[in-house]
Length: 279
Image (cartoon, rainbow, N blue to C red):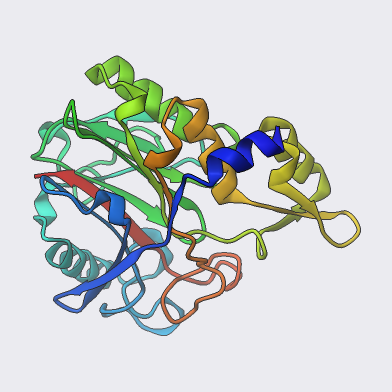
């Protein structure tokens, strides 16, 4: 099975482009730099937060000053080229629940009451901007150019193990008639296989859920898990073509100048945000 995966993986795209707009930097997948679509994954640069949350902290619960986070999100929106009022954010619970949203949901989690618990969002409404929050967890970007629909997921280790990418593709298929073979998928920055150490029992759970190659031994009682490979495997299981898959290959743990990292900073840290929208 590993040989089969390796053959398909040779057709993946890797890497990212980094762009700054109005002082806010975004990591982007080249495959999604298309007319009619905007997307990106923020860095920690360009905000007003202080201390361990410096500077573009985009998590409401990670510091005491909500006014700073509000200003950071307004800067994020300007840099992304979207209206602050059009954004809706997941109410993540580290699961695999995916909700369909539309313009009626704009502002939820941004001054309006949050959505029900969810870690993924889908829409075919260009009036709404899908937003997810991250500090080591993966970001899954989906775009169906034929049906003009998008999906955005927060994929922590639990959501990854529960295959939220597969769930999101299935939701798009039911909601919009999406053919998975048309989906362009990208996995954004996250903690890399060299840094994501887990208990050996959890590593075995990943190996059983995906394939043995996603896990390698670590210190006694420990293992390392390859979250980007787990993302790619569930994309393939969903029916996404290997040539439509991009892995950005940027580690949040290893780059403190650009990224917050929950694990590196032992929880005393901020969060980045990812977004996608039709335009």
